[in-house]
Length: 606
Image 1 (cartoon, one colour):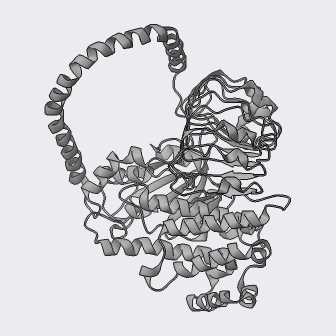
Image 2 (cartoon, one colour):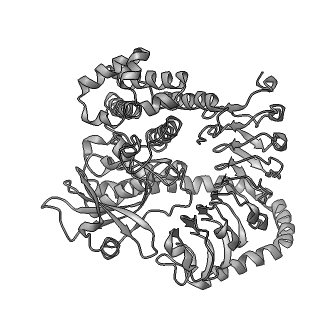
Image 3 (cartoon, one colour):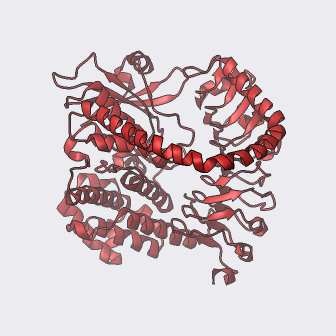
């Protein structure tokens, strides 16, 4: 049916459960401008026929299982936004359209070198090639592209050195070269921006650098492997013949010998946790979380694994926790801005814990918190347990080191009263979708789920691309035993905690509709104002004029209805976060359709 809609301009079917191949009839939609099929289970090859849709400006197929090669896309001359991240594409990088301003190709298996053709992408602002298998020298021209502001090449196999006098474009604000095989000095021009270098062999790259011999050795191994691959293939074929004869016998013996041992190892791990588990989170919860952590990983995008910081590092980063570095203070401690030795900006939260955890048990809890990796969670980069300085007679001080998110919180972006421009309605929908995805991940992306996540507009941070990240999530694992879902927790109690997140998210929706004044009003007043949503006159009286002037009727009605459901007094009638996310994506889709003929089009989201 859709294949016959030749006048269709926008097709968004994100977040469904499509598990077939990408349709090969999409090229029949000859007027299509926006094609977004992200967050599905689409598999099979990337259809080359998409290259025939010359009208495309946005192509988003992220977070699927699309495999094989990526064809030349340069024929789609008007393509501006390309998001193929989180798939299984494994070819060399193809030519890309010169009009492109955003290319997200991270978390695939792309091989080969970065094409020199990329030097012609003069409109490119955001390039993410992280977490692939790219090798060879890094084209220095990428840093000098006239409009590039974000460049992420982390977690590849790029080698060689960068010239100390490398030229960086005037708009470049962020570069991540971490976890490659680069040697020599870090370029000086990167010192003036937010840059990450860890996991290389740089002599001036700050902490977490390998010796140069490590990178050169890895390069020699790669070259040797390539030279011997043909001989190895012959050996493998011969070995297979012999191996098949031994396979049945080997499986029998392995089953008898190693299955009991595996059970013993699991029991031993649980026993070790139990010995140090002094409060409500059960040893089985912590142990099982360790086993499923690989499945739970999502959205790392080149951010380093959580590590342990020393007090000396944190004191140096924050000028000994000077008042000038203090960003704020709340019920859960003070927050400081800091700068690491490698010039990376961080936010350091100081927590005073009242519970008597042993250092080992607290470390297990922090490790569990560190497993939470998602594009819309503020990333925990590391921690420090200060066992020397007690917060009081019954607890420790713990420092959590987070990535620094530069542009304030959502509340400051909901009005023009501050120094930032208020978000328009499509931008607010993007932010709400980002946070809904983050909370859905916290509830279902790891076992045990993380609930009671302090959802409020002050804890939603906005990055340089006006995308949202949730902060202060999951702290119940180290703060209050009664807040965390251990094994003994009753199902009804757990559902109450889940619904608390839904309820709090309802007030985030409400603040996005009405404006920051929500925070200063009592609940009874807010409920009265919400009753006004039922009429157009009432909407004009209470809804933010920025929202009213920039929203379509169907999009606004969808979010108003969702807000009412989230704050229902009867918790059993509140929607799940899957329902919340679906409704927000629908609201964004109908808004994009309504805006399709306007000059700037819709705001793309993933």
